[in-house]
Length: 187
Figure 1 (cartoon, rainbow, N blue to C red):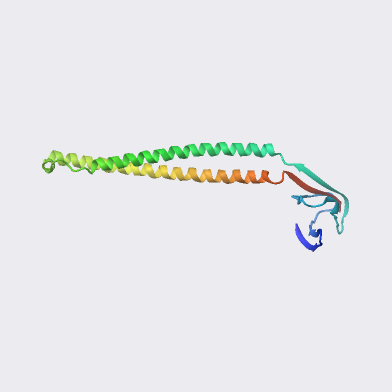
Figure 2: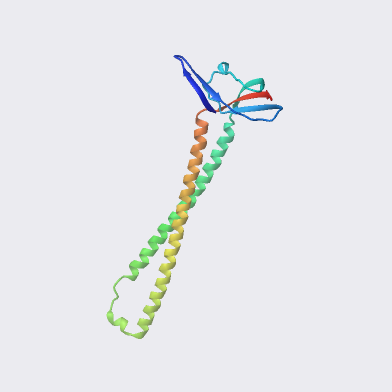
């Protein structure tokens, strides 16, 4: 609600709020939600121009914290599943990294004799090996990149779930009462 004016006294403050509503003729109920917890109910005055205010009611409703807690538990379970998937992707990344470095290390060892490469069979075998090695390494790197992207997606999902859980917990942490004003009017 828009604030019209504020007058501060030594022991209290008077805050005038303005609510402009255009409604057709008839009986209407106006609901003002999320009223402050520190407001004194007896101090509230409701004025209206061009309307007959029949009744003003203040109502407090307990928030169903069990439902919020259930939502938190569901999100926590989703988070654990996502973390397990991320750990599996992480394990596969480290396995592929170790396997790739082992293949590279074994292939870079010095040949035992230079004379070995002089034969045409050895040369064609070497060419076949290098072609196979190149395809294998390319495939491994491609798979490794896919797993890294998968790991990043799980990390983002976990962060989003943590934000949702924090948001729900913060909502439960403060005030568990919803306060509303109900105005019965005739236009």
